[in-house]
Image 1 (tube, helix red, strand yellow):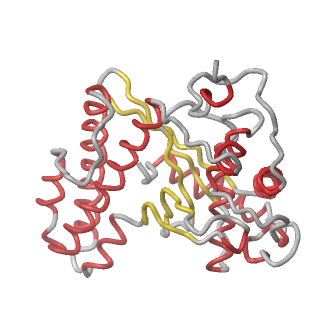
Image 2 (cartoon, one colour):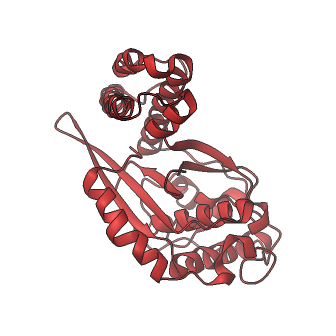
Length: 299
């Protein structure tokens, strides 16, 4: 999921990397500037990146319900499926890394053997359709990794085990980050950090939303606050299942001032609502699949 194809690599090298160099990020919006405005937290209430970036509720009342009234959400089918698919992607990468570190340059047979889904670590699938799609996802991911491994081993026959693992799988998945410097929760978790290109990535199963990019800005600034190294690029991986196939689209983009400021504004607005216990009110049009719909429309 997190490995760019040849066309995307060319876009990265020819368009987005030059664009990132030309579009300088303001120093005040770099994560390492966390002690000063506008990044310094205004309120003591801490939120997760997904809470700040999520705009599924038009008035952001979901954050108020969860943080102030302690209302527990009722996960819908899409949320359950998304969690299951996320776990599959992470598990395949973990299993592949284990095979590489165990067998080194002789790990290709083990990697090719990963094509058959088999892991007790996965959560229970949310129905038969989710299980079928999950199997497709597992095989798609495993085959891509095996192909990358065959290519890397052919090009780098003398590579050591660690170098080989980095060449085949230059990502860290489900990384836990401490967002405290930016007034965020201690348990911020980013789907993937692509250390080969210094990029952050997010995995989505569902419709595209403009606000999805805000989350990547948040993750980038958290990483900058911890490592004091610039993160200028990110991409969202949109996965769907059609006619028994996995389809993948990647939204590669520069994480510039506009996205960073948008994230900071959302953080401050939602933290204020929580700190001062201000109910933003029920939206005029509530999505019926909202996990808090029952709390706003009890009748």
